[in-house]
Image 1: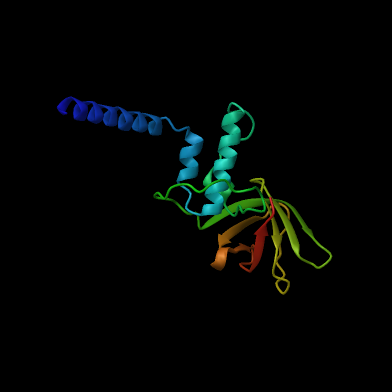
Image 2: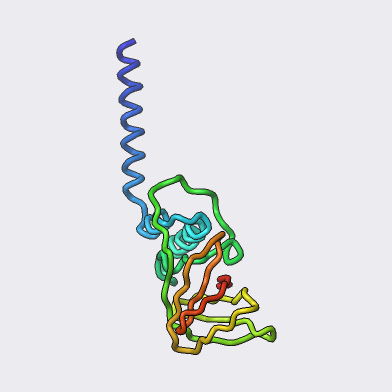
Length: 161
């Protein structure tokens, strides 16, 4: 009976050690994603990281918290949930405007130098934004975002890319 317990204990030790060894070998892209606090941003980050790993690390740079800021399920399908861990949450990002255009309804479409695209949601707010301006995108209530123009005025926006 003592030998069986010893074998079971040894097997459990080997299994636990192999689990720790596998956890230590996570690619840096996955480590970056695990630190994101928002589920939608974290899950989309995992999708990007896995695609990059499958491609042999070629193509896009590794996902970053700034790159995933404002990402939602409409931009890419979310994968399975990740275990809860200590996570960081960006409250805002700053980027330069590379393209600014108004739709027929007067709402802004902004392309930023970080590759993100945002569409204005507030009809009653007119922002002054020109190509080359630096804007701040802030996280707001209920999963919304606000872009602040150079005059300090803000409007709700939705990330579309």
